[in-house]
Length: 170
Image (cartoon, rainbow, N blue to C red; front, side, top):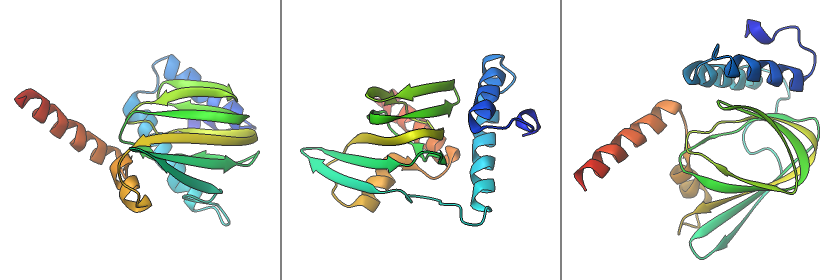
């Protein structure tokens, strides 16, 4: 994006994007296009780590899957598109996070709720342990990801449209 060229650090770029979002110069659709473009650009960088490239552990309890990921300092990542609201916990660490709602800096211990439709850009300021909890009775990781992760924003919107139609019929 031309609006963030020339800024030296990832945090400066994210703060600039935040200013653009807050000033209503960047709509939700523009943010989504920008984050998808960033992700595609990152895939072209030799040696870039894409996908679940950090240490990731899964554990299960009645009706839920707990995912714990270790994020090393200095990493920039773009998260997946979340289909469902779910809690997350930053056990330790320090991250700068950009979503379509703007920029925040989070330090562990911290907890929050990921809203359906969220796709984050994260800069890891300090080694971080991030945990998410997903409601599911499934134990197969691939099937769980199909339940909770959208491959595109269009897929997410189709799901929301179907849910609205079903809710209207009830």
